[in-house]
Amino acid sequence: MSEGENTELEAVAELAKRRGFFFQSSGAYGGVSGFYTYGPEGAALKRNLEDAWRDRFVTREGHMEVSAPDVMPEPVFEASGHLDGFDDMILECPECGESHRADHLVEDNSDVEDAEAIPIEEVQEMIADLGLTCPTCGADLAGEPVEEFNLMFETNIGPGSSQPGYLRPETAQGIFVEFPRLKEYARGQLPFGVAQVGNAYRNEISPRRALVRVREFTQAELEHFIDPEEDEPPIERVADVELPLYSAENQNGEGGIEYLTVREALDEDVVGSEWVAFYLGLAKGWYERVGVDMDRFRYRQHLSGERAHYAVDCWDAEAELGGDWVEITGFAYRSDYDLSKHAAHSDGDFTLFKQYDEPKTVERPTVDPDMSVLGPEYGDVAGDIREELQLLAERDPEAFEADTVQVTVDGEEYGVDTDVANFAVEEETEAGEHITPHVVEPSFGVGRLVYTVLTHAYGEDEVDGERRSYLQVPTELAPTFVCVAPLVSNDDPLVERAESVRERLREAGFEVDYDDSGSIGRRYRRQDEVGTPFCVTVDHETLERDDYDAETVTLRDRDSTEQARVPAADLPELLADLQAGDATFDALLDRGDVHRV
Image 1: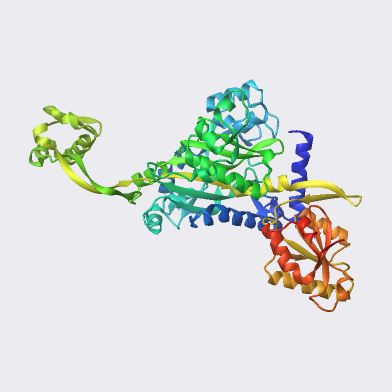
Image 2: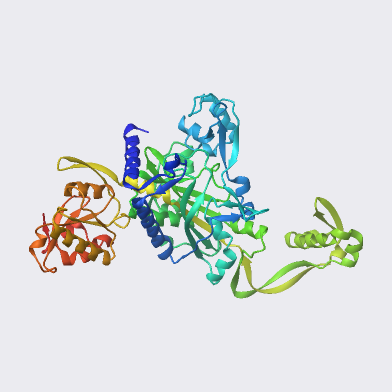
């Protein structure tokens, strides 16, 4: 990380705390690592970002949204694999007892970018070879054991001998476990998508880098359920979108980012899944819309060793922050892993009935064992043997051509005469079949996106001989859209007229701030620093007209700092056009009733 990059993050962190975007929680009690409070500006920015996400990935795509509990019972996570496979590498200092992420220690002190994908034994050897010491006390870490640490927060549901539960480490499981009911709301028709915006929790070993690695965070996830044999994405909608792709092949070699259209990426097998490619293309336009700098953005493919247990193919959207690439979204093809796991561990039906265009006649191998023979001969396991015979018939009908068939129950083999098994092949007419849908998942980290938007929007320049810091956030994300201010605060008529303008704009639906503290230049700087796109100033020229329809005010643009004299009565319409992107401030200056100040 260069000095300039480090300074950028320091400036953003200082601004975030001073202006109320985000700060460490429970500061009165010394603070708690990994937990952050969003202040008034940050909460508004976060809410606007979530609304923009809903607009793009829920409303416009015709998906549904749910809100599941943060706490779920233990069997959910046994089925999902989180109890056994949701671990990070932990290393404890022998001197001070501080715990560290072993893979992060390697990444921070070497050229290795993805130590998480390296086996634990190799990470332990690298720590010794690099001569790493404890970041807290400086003790030698060579030879110290690196172990797995499960990241889930455990809790109890109910008093006494309560049911064990966990704070969810991702919002996705709240969608998957409710699939038997959600499919009814979709009228049993694929494809359909279910979205959720909510908190997730991970007991991170060493939280760091502000909102990048925390213990409580917000996810915006979409689970898109599809028929893998029939459902195809509308690739034509995004075919020409150019993607900055950093493939696994290039990461393993010496290649860098390739710029390929969605169609080229599929034709050249750089992206293996059409559905993943579709969402990469769809999301790129949205990232631009919310203010992610495309010169500091890429899609990186997961290496085989870091791929999640459920992912057939996975790409991360990454943004450059302070010289480091940070994941802001994961795009995964989860196949039928999740639904199949929950089907095996629960009593729910996680399939959909797929009706054929025309009924089909199929041959189905069956057995009808003579239980009057199996029962006396095999006793309690006779029923299990019958089930295994049926499974064998479906799997390997030719096995019944021999005089005796062999089946295994609880590790022990049993021989059954073919005549006793009563094997046959019967014809059946089927109207359809039950299938387990596959899942495509774009999973967005809202906090990391907030941090990215703030960092990429931050700028400094000089206005009227004074240094100015500002946030060039898109208008739809800005915590406050417009600030109204009287030119001076000790002039009662000006204040009265300014308050009237403020109320009219609020009634028109705008997020409006009112500022009458300090010089007008200082007030402009305050609004620039929190990203307010426009300021309206009521001055003495406004008071020259008693008729509201004739009075004018000054409208100031954050980015250019230019000002224009506009009719006060037209403000709601002008601001609505600017907010919707139907007009620009430069175009506004060309209107006959608008005059540059």
